[in-house]
Length: 286
Image (cartoon, rainbow, N blue to C red):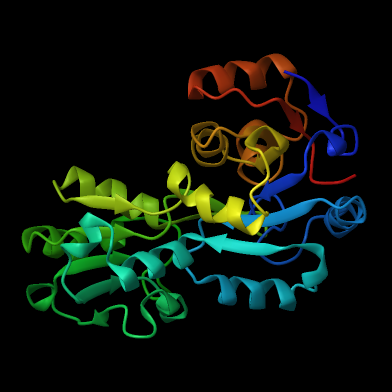
């Protein structure tokens, strides 16, 4: 597999860029070195840029977080998040699976994720016996982000009540300032083992790419590339949506494969994951 030093050599092959956030644009605390400059170069060439993240918060919350990191809004055209997609599904209820859900839910996750149910999308209750579904946005501040086991008793109670789970972040883990922490997908794995029904919203589901393409101005798909650090979400999702994918060797990729993986090793991993990125890139820099 070819390993690019930056994106400059392929930039003009594409009109639209779909970028993962955690592990590609930033490390959970600040942008990676060279990212603002790379985005500025793309915008100077008239490229459309959309961030697609499995973050379990609405797009306006994610935008505020990027503001606090100092990332200028002029450097991108839009944001689509798993939280935004989930809020839309809970609000309009046109999807048959969501149409069958009731309005009351037990929530596993921190209060800062509750933008997912704002404007009456759902009502939070504390007792699984009074709930219609389980809303899983990931680890909370009390039980912590290092292991899924502290969440097992609540997951067992919800499974006993036969609550379907809405998993608002299909990621199993993410790197935050160099530390690996679990995401909602890790809790969904336990729930599936318990026999619970789970609907995961976000990458790699190709449906989440439709609003992204709208934000990009609906360019031809062969003129759009997605950049991500995780094969089973970012790369697989792009492939399922009919987009080229570029594998960023930052974030979880760096944690799993080191700072200088060989082309042969990356090719073997991609084959095992069933994905075919056009190349890998050392980081999102020009």
